[in-house]
Image (cartoon, rainbow, N blue to C red; front, side):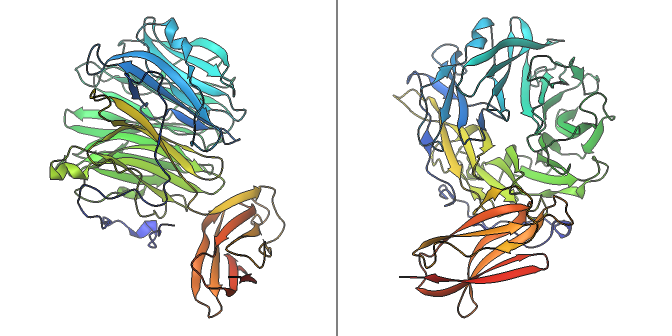
Length: 534
């Protein structure tokens, strides 16, 4: 497991420098599994992912993913969409089902690739746009990819026939659709809109403009509500000040979108602050990520920044936001932010383009995680190492077993055509612990490992009660020591909800003999003995 920075969040106002060498190949961090290619229907077409989200995971472990296939021989290099295809995997992404075509887009002209979300019953929700009719639409498939709701219109075009969309779902299975309308590459105005549905997508609240109608660009709004169960919504977007100066703005609703607080400019300086990603966790903390192109060295100085608020955005910690990425290494486009409410792990991903400094136009994906709700962050991990190629659209989903999975697109030379291909990769939980039951225990319990004696694998089960009967997280450590008292392994080190858990221990590399494992949570400590046979 990667080491977590030990200094607290409240003391890291200085920039944190990571020790990475600048070279063409760095390797994939060992925590990440093998790269798996997603099948294509037509090998002569480019296969694209989707900006923000095209991958979700059901409670059963089934992973759903969709891709878009384009004929780039027509209208190059963008091409034209030839089909949108949905896949699923029941074995952690090792193999994928026969594709099911997403047919609702055939009812319209100029349709966009959909964004997706998944509800507790395994229904997969789709949000997409079209040019004719110029509107935004919703469709729903069931767990077995049967089309249940064909096409429902969410909203019509207001001014411009171009959108950037996002779809998220909260823990009460309420859908939230967010989008901007307008082309940020020209002088047209772009505005931010929002709608929601509390009846599984059958009806939608009338779309509401959230941005100020000031004749400028307000673009790429986002929020992740997968971990949230209350009525609080916080949506952030980038807002144009001048052509080279953007701020991050936000609006907050505490009543499920019935009314909204005034626009708050959360980040305002002379830099190009852009493309925020917001997440609300199950305790109501608002986490805000964005990338910054600083006034000095805006290209290579691009960096990812983070802060959180516990009082609905009135104050942010730290006030100047924390730089998560290495200085001078061009890191931007933060996406894939997710929060595991069972294990209290906060994830985020970004694109690293440090090799541009060597004249190599290639990019890779990196990530970092926090096990204490953003107070401290792990050392960044390399998710990809594409050598002479570059990754593009990327998206992430939590998996049912505590891990996280990503998909991303890579340009390649297939049949000499320079096509794009989508790949998948998965990582296990950094805690190495799995919940057995979320029923609130009455007491702390550290069970005897089983099997015991063991060679080389064993399991340790333990229980964490609620604090004063409340369902609050606790800082938990489970460590293994040899007979001399030297620590040989850390099985758990993070915040856990009340419940019963099971941690795996691998004795490979250790000599046979007696070992001790110790559980520490608050003032509670208990130690047991186990025997490794060789």
